[in-house]
Length: 323
Ligand code: GLU
Image (cartoon, rainbow, N blue to C red; front, top):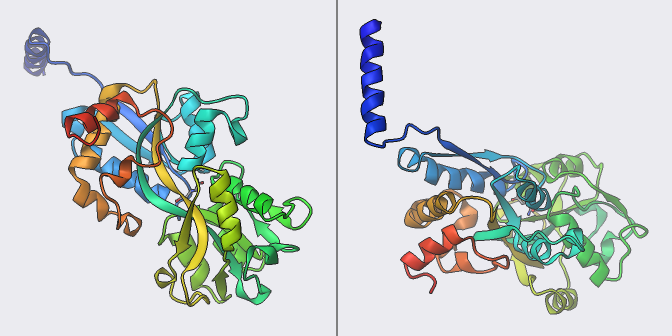
C-alpha cells in the first residue's frame, strides 16, 4: 500500500512537472425533444460521434429528452443546457426577439449546423373526415406543449387560414410523445408535430387499430406562409414511410429545418470538437437515422440565422466549407 502510494505520488509529480493535466472531463448536455421524435436520436448520434474521442477531447456529451425547440432555446439562454436542437424558425425568432421572445431577444444564441428537414405534420383520425386545414374546425386538436416547436407553427397556420385557435376548435397542449396514443384512444381528433420523417411517433399513430390520415395544407396557404415568413418552405410528407396510412399520395405542407444551437458562452474548443467529429465522420453520421438520408455537408450550413459559433466557424474555415 505504502509503496503504491509512493509510486502514485511519483507519477503525479512527473505528470505535473511535464505539464500534463489530469483535469476533470468537461460534460455537455444536448437538449432534444420527446423520445419518439427525431431530435432525441439525433442528439444521441451527435453525442456518439464526439464521445468516441472522449480521451482526445476530454469531453463527454449526454442527451436529455425535453419539451422541444422553445424549451431548448430557453435552457441554453439560462445556461442549463450547452447545446439544443432547435427548429430553424425558432432560432430566427429567438435571436431576433420575435414570437415567444418578443422584446427579449436571445442575443447569446449561436448556430452550430443544421440537420434534417422537418415538416409540419398533421395526423388525424380518418373517421373524422379531416382532409384539409379547414376541416379542423370544431375538432379536438393537440397543437403541442408550450415548449415545443410545433405549437407556433400551428398558430401561424391557423392565422393564415383565418381560423381562431381559441374559438374554432378545442386546442390541447400536450407533448408529442402522448399524441399517438391519445389519437388512437379517441381523446383527440388530430395532432400537430413538426418533425423529420420517418419518426417513431407518427409510426405509432399509424400502426394502431384506428385508421389515420395526414391533413393537407392547401397551396394558397403555404404560399401565404412562405411569403410572410422567411423561415418557412414548402414541404411534403412522404406516405411511403408510413404503411397503413390512408393517404395514397405525398401530402403537401410547409416546413423548417432542425438545427444545432449553443450559447456564445460555450468555449470554442468544445463547439469545435463536436462540429469536427460530426463532419469528419459524416458518412457514418448519416447512417444513424433514416431522416438524415439526404443530408450533405453543404446543406448543413443552410438555415442558420443566429451567428455561427466561432468554434464551429474555425472548423468550416479549416476545411473550406466557409470563407
Ligand atoms: N420539432 C419539434 C420541436 O421543436 C421536435 C421534433 C423532434 O423531437 O424530432 O419541438
